[in-house]
Structure formats: C-alpha cells, structure tokens
Image (cartoon, rainbow, N blue to C red; front, side):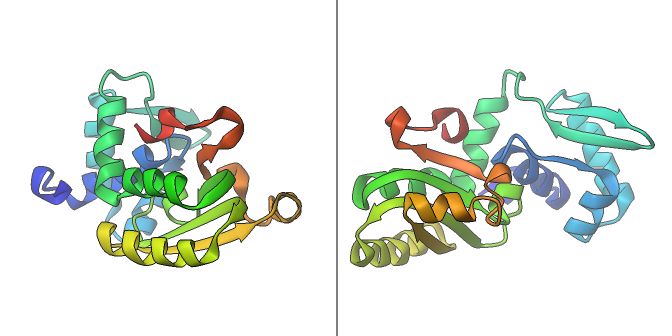
Length: 187
C-alpha cells in the first residue's frame, strides 16, 4: 500500500526508519549502508524531507544527524500510516486484549530501529498464557504478513536482561501502570 502512494523506495525506507520509532537518529552514510543505496539518492530524499520540515537535522562535527520532527503538524498522521503499514497497530490491540496479565511490552530489534525486516521481536513482561500466545503469534503474523518472535519474561528476569535486550532503544508499546496503550507511539 505505502509503495503505491510513495514511489521512492528510499523515501519509504526513511519514513519507516524515522517514524516507526521517533527517537531514532541517523546520519547519511549509516542510512546509505543500511538501505544498500547510494549516498546521493539517500541525500536527495533526506533533503526533501528536511525541506518539508518532516525531519530535523543537527550538525555533530562533520556529520549531519537526522531525526523525525515530532512537532510537525503531520507527524502523528504519517506515524499512523507507517505503523499501519507494518501492522503494529493491530499487533498492540490484539496483544493487550488476549494474552493475560501483561505488565509491559516492548518492540526490540529491527523494528525498534525503524527497519522493516519482516521480523517483529517483542518482549512481554508479565504472566502470559503460552497457548494463547502461540495462537496469537500465528494468527496475527498471518494478518500483518510479518513473523512475530515473542520473548516472555517475569519482572525479575526483565530487570536482569534489560541492558542485554537494549530496552533503552526499544519501542515501548504497553505499560500496565499507565493502564493504556502508549498512544503517543501507536496512534
């Protein structure tokens, strides 16, 4: 769907990179290597998105670091389209409704970095019904056309593995203490 609306593969990759997780920051050569595209084609699209004020750029020595402009009027709308494209909206909704007592949930790995690899790594903290989880993973994976790889931890295990899982750079999608889906990230 997204590739029908936006014909530039590079632009789609940039939107996924910066709008899946708005905390993502990257520079030109890093993006070029990640996408397997020439620096010139990436630079052109970065300039277009920066000129449209959808991305912010900051100088860090000789590098220009790019990030999503979360204050842009269209930020939420673009983020919604990108998230629906990768299926995160459906994933979160189903996750919370069906799996038991989830304290916290995070997307880690490629999707947290804004890379649509087709594999969604998700960390679930709490007491989860494993049979229901297996059914959920299969059905939702088929629905969103992506493989879902869950990791279920209790609170103690989560605290021990937090650094190793790189939770600081994850995409938080649920926190029971807030009793809501983290809407600023999902909708």
